[in-house]
Amino acid sequence: MKPSTFTVAVAALSTGVQGATYAVPGTAPAGAALLDPAPVGVSFEFFAFPSYFTNVTGTTQCLQNLQALTGTWPPIRIGGTTQDRADYDPSTSAYVVYSVASAVDAPAILTFGPSFMSLAAKYPGTVVVGLNRGHDNVSNTIAAAKVARSQMQNLLAIELGNEPEYYLGASQPVAVNAGSWTPAVDAASQNNWDILVGSALQAPLIIQAGNSNSAPPTWGAAELIATENATVKSYVHNYAHHNYPGGTVQSLMSHSGIVSDMTMFIPDVAAAQGTGKQYVLGETNSVSGGGAATVSPTFGAGLWTMDYALRASLLNISRTYFHHGTIGACQYCFWGRYDMGAPYYGAYAAAATMAGGSYISALDSGSTAFAVYVVYNSAKTPIKALLYNSNYFNGTGSRTSESFVLTGLAGNTLKAKRLTAVSALSRVDQGQNPSFGGQYFQNVTCSVGGTEAFESAAVSGGQATFSVKASEALLVYLQ
Ligand SMILES: *[C@@H]1O[C@H](CO)[C@@H](O)[C@H](O)[C@H]1NC(C)=O
Ligand SMILES: *[C@@H]1O[C@H](CO)[C@@H](O)[C@H](O)[C@H]1NC(C)=O
Ligand SMILES: *[C@@H]1O[C@H](CO)[C@@H](O)[C@H](O)[C@H]1NC(C)=O
Ligand SMILES: *[C@@H]1O[C@H](CO)[C@@H](O)[C@H](O)[C@H]1NC(C)=O
Ligand SMILES: *[C@@H]1O[C@H](CO)[C@@H](O)[C@H](O)[C@H]1NC(C)=O
Ligand SMILES: *[C@@H]1O[C@H](CO)[C@@H](O)[C@H](O)[C@H]1NC(C)=O
Image (cartoon, rainbow, N blue to C red; front, side):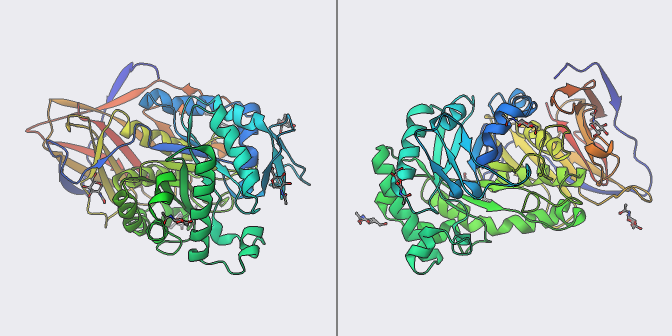
């Protein structure tokens, strides 16, 4: 990003605004969560991954913008429903081979060649590769895993199957052949495959296990871990779950709603931590099935993306991989072939908030519309605070404002960057581009446009007041 060239004063308080006071701790509290170097990740649908990286102009720049914030390329995961439709074909030179009736269809069956893994190997960040368990051909999956392992220095983990709870409904052979398909039967299958694939690769800590979408505890990590012996665990790198909360823009972006939605992961995260392994959201986004046209492309969904990524990190969820599906049929995508998506602005603001941080805590109760996250450096000194007013403003009527009073602050003046748009319903493709610190992202290329603008706030007696409108967020730099 370009250096700051001007600052503007934080909007003065108007009468009648609500307000609450939050004491910023001088040091990270004991229960603060440890931050991954790049907690905001991107998931690519298996069959579409080569197209994203060879035939969509903005992909590398959109990822690089996040790298520029954190110094670490965002982690990516390649997988999804089509990983369980894909068979490895060592003889094809193509990345993927399939045919579809329409360009916006996902293939029902496909093959992929060794070049799929050499393309993934070029990505400068870590990669999780999702392979097939549905077809019940472990030798085919081992052959693919061996190519991934030998070609990819950046391979973080391999998944053995995606959302197995849906296998029987999809007539996947592994479920049909098992005779019955329950969480226990799936766990036995996963554990067996973890050992078969892990031992064939002679690689400990290589499997991203779990990968279900149904609300835990059923199909969750705690349930799976209880079935694993030490041999199985020796091959598991980490546990993953999927989540698509859905709802309206208003319910999706609600801070108390996000807190409530994510409470279901707490026991599973604790179970993973009990094994000494990480827990991630391996595939997630606003609404399942590529998103909802009236919800997923909006700025409100972008605010959800921001709060959800921060809340996940607060809950010790190491990484959150936001899914990107069929190109041209992806309502929640951060970017496409043509226009940017408003959700990218939320992902960018979340990455900016956590960049350079080692710990995160929250100062809000979780039961109101207002969120206050504090990020600390490795010395546990607070470096940033993210203030979020999740009240819904749809563009009609007057836009309310919340004054966040922060105490315990150092210095005389603090600078801040605002994440804003005309309303929660703003969409890039409808000409209402959001902005973050006065900047935006160009369509097609994803390059940063506009001049970086910081607001400034006066600190008096260690206290400052920040005004944040409904459906807006403010990133305050505490140093
Ligand atoms: C996150 O992990 C830390 C230990 O690293 C722990 O103190 C804290 O309670 C955990 N947070 C949650 C919400 O479980
Ligand atoms: C790239 O995308 C364009 C536009 O959708 C499409 O016509 C073309 O076939 C794609 N090329 C490849 C190699 O996938
Ligand atoms: C299973 O995979 C192996 C190795 O790729 C292949 O030779 C075999 O034909 C596959 N079996 C079936 C039933 O597809
Ligand atoms: C661990 O469990 C697997 C099945 O998940 C089983 O095949 C293996 O024998 C068990 N190993 C030990 C040492 O009990
Ligand atoms: C916005 O909300 C108001 C009620 O507060 C409603 O009357 C109006 O139809 C809504 N507008 C849109 C675009 O949803
Ligand atoms: C992106 O394109 C849309 C039209 O599809 C336009 O309304 C919007 O203003 C463009 N955004 C930028 C930042 O140029």
